[in-house]
Length: 118
Length: 110
Image (cartoon, rainbow over all chains, first blue to last red):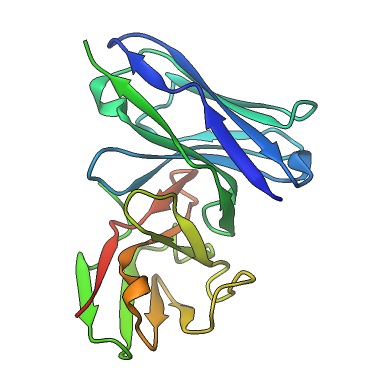
């Protein structure tokens, strides 16, 4: 079964850091680009970051550029999102997804909740 | 603020048809494929349409997608109560070098 499982969310103070993980199974992880998408409470979907499959090229939304880093470990079938200098506006459910926004993200994790508050 | 604009809501009776528009511009919809997602509140999004008009396995042909110029459209025919959800379009923006989603549309079955 193709599956994505996020972890690492939680409550963090403004200015703090968190690292999200997304464990993939059921497909050849290294062959696919991967994406992080977030959804603030009561709001729509927001694209956060993406990483290429083989070349590892990375892309970021302006709202997180310079603060967040996407990476992947193909030997562990795991996607990461290192989040630094967190702000209240980063509070959201964070989803990892297989694929990219235009060609279609066909598998999604269940999401992990990040709350930034003092 | 999203670069892709969708109507906030659409509604129709069971069995009827609805269409959802997604308006963008040259760097995004004008140059790239469009995908569509369904999200039932409290659950993860689900891919409905990819590469403008293709349906993943398991998605019924009641769902269709099209693209023309800088706009895309999702159509849902034979509306069912289970179709009540939020729908989002998505694409790549070649100027921003980033993915973008639409503002989202809530579908209500009357």
